[in-house]
Length: 51
Length: 309
Image (cartoon, rainbow over all chains, first blue to last red; front, side, top):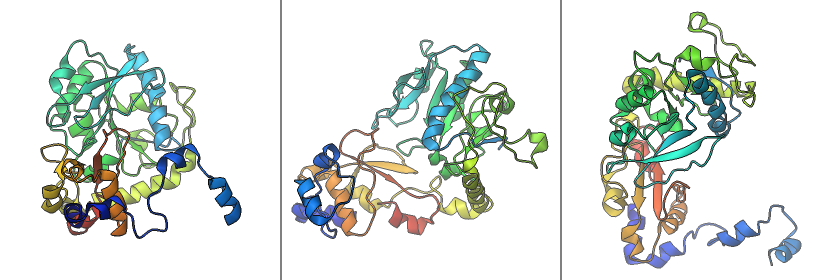
């Protein structure tokens, strides 16, 4: 928390764009809530569903 | 514990099931009040809506985030029960909980003390005596099995309350036995017994034995006795409430918001550091609060690390 507080002062964009260590970064939480994809599908199909 | 119930299928279920049980008790006492009260914190909004025919009446807390006794004493406040966390939702240990219980009992109401927050008190405080009830109001505790070591204490006799829950331990005279009773004389028909929590009850017992049996060791590491959170974060993140918060703490992102960074961003950044983020959007909280809860089962040293996620 101390490190993050310092980052906020020196590089706020680093914090605003977190997380950086995960496969997915900034998840669209509003869309995820309104149009949840609750079932896994093969990549091609899933991509189409996400669209 | 004078009585233990396995009635609820889960913590949430217990939060619902308790209402008809209480209403059955209170109706017998002649208390027909249709409302219960929930302290509303300076930094939190009540999570309660309408529950099983009861209307929630929120009573504001004082500037220290504690219950306001004067508000409770007001003749206009007619309540059937007060739901309270102790330590409360924002981590403050209520200083006047005994007086609060006395006020409630004088009004013919009951005090329901919820829930997981009480982990911080296991092995340290005799809740039934010090908190929920006292000598003139026979004490009883209910251990809710699905929240290990939670010990809600309610104003009322053990025997009285035990008649309204579907499963309980036998009378204190037969404490060596534990059995399930699927029906109770005054049970509300909507409350069902559920014996599937037995394994959780065993874990709860193990939890209590492990911690309560070593009060000295626990005393050093528990949330009740240590100042939560190192001073470093406190200097950088403004606590949303001034005063001593221990079990939990609520921070404001006022300082970071000037840089365009909000508490949700900080929570996500914590993931990069390998920590599970703190609670950001507890429904009870206003926007832009971060809610940190330390585990009570860790030592002071390790909890300094674990308290920040």
